[in-house]
Image 1 (cartoon, rainbow, N blue to C red):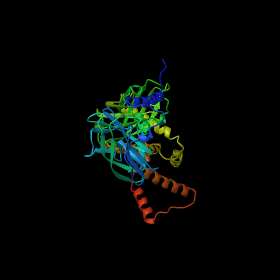
Image 2 (tube, rainbow, N blue to C red; image 1 turned 90 degrees about the horizontal axis):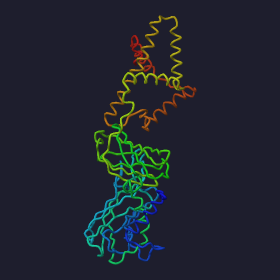
Image 3 (tube, one colour; image 1 turned 180 degrees about the horizontal axis):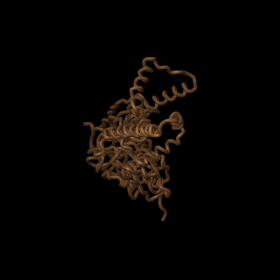
Image 4 (cartoon, rainbow, N blue to C red; image 1 turned 60 degrees about the vertical axis):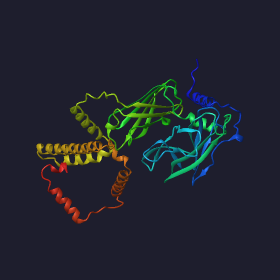
Length: 435
C-alpha cells in the first residue's frame, strides 16, 4: 500500500470537494455562465459575493464565497483576529429568498504583528472566504441579500459596509469560473486532526505563560519549523502568539510553543475550552479541546538552598564575561589599597560588598515576581523586550563610549557633585555596599 503525501491529500481534497458538490469537472471553466454579484469598490479594496455554481441545482447547501481584492499593504481579519481588528460578518437582508442560513468557512490566515507589537491573524491580497448557504427548499431559485461588514487595515483601519445581491436561478448546477478558487479556499480550511493526517493533537498549559501544542502525524511532514504555527482561540480577552516550533527527526511529531500575551490571569486558562488550529503548510488541522496542565518539571525536587547555591555558582561563572572585567579591575584595585589593613576589616568590607550584590538582586527578583503577579510578562531580560528601554540603554552606552574615547566630557554642576559627596559621606561603616 502506498501512503499519500500531505500535498497529494490536499489536491485530492480540492477535487473531492468539487465532486461532492455535484459538479462536473470540465476542461475549462464556464465563463459564459459566470455568477457573481457586482463589485463594490473602495479606496484600496473591492468586494463581492461569488458562486461556485451557475444555478441552485438540487443540493441543500450552495457553495459561495466572499471575495475581497486588496491593494498591497492592506489586509482583513480572520474569525479570531487577535489583539486588534474585526472579522467579516454577513447579515441576511429582507430581500433574500429561499435562504435558511449562511456561514463563513475560514481558511487558515497569516499570523501578523502590527504596530510593532500587536499580534493579529490576517488575510492579504486576493482573499476568498468560502460561504455555505443553506437553502429552505432545494431546487428553488435562491436570492441572497447580503449585508457585509468588515474592517480593512494598513497604517489605519477603516470599517467597511457592503450591501450586495446574488441570485441563483433554478436549474442544473454547472460550475462557474469561480468554482476553482472557492474549492482551493475550502482546501485551506483546517479539518479534524484525523482527516488532516494527525493521530493526536493536544495542548497543555504550564501554569505561567506558555501553552505547548503537540501533534503526531501519520505521515512525514514536508515542511520546515518556520512554516508551522498554532493559532489558539480561548476565553474572551485572552490573546496568543505562536512563538516557535520544532519537528522530530522522523518528521512526524510537531511541537509548538505558544505564548499567552499579557495581561492575563492564569486561572482563566486552567481547564479552559480552547480551539487549536495547527498550520504546517502541508496539512492543517482544527480541534476543540479542554486545556490540560503541562507535565511537572523533572526539577521539581530542587530545594531553595540548592537553587541559591546554583545561583551563586552562576554568578561566579558570569565573572568570566568580558563586560565584568572592568568591575573586577576595580575590586582588585581596592584589594591593593587595603594592603596593610587589618585582615578582619578587609574581610568585612568584601563580605559587605557581596551582601550588597545579593540584596540588590533579591530586590530585582521581588520586582519581577510582583510584575508577574500583576499578570504581566516578566522573565530573564524581559526589559530588553521594551523598545524604549533599548533606546535608553543605547544612548547611555554611546555617551559612555564617547567619554572613554575623549570625544566629550560630561560635567555635573558643582552643587550636584557636592550633594553626591555629602550623600556618600553620610554612609557609615559598610552601608555604602547597599547604596
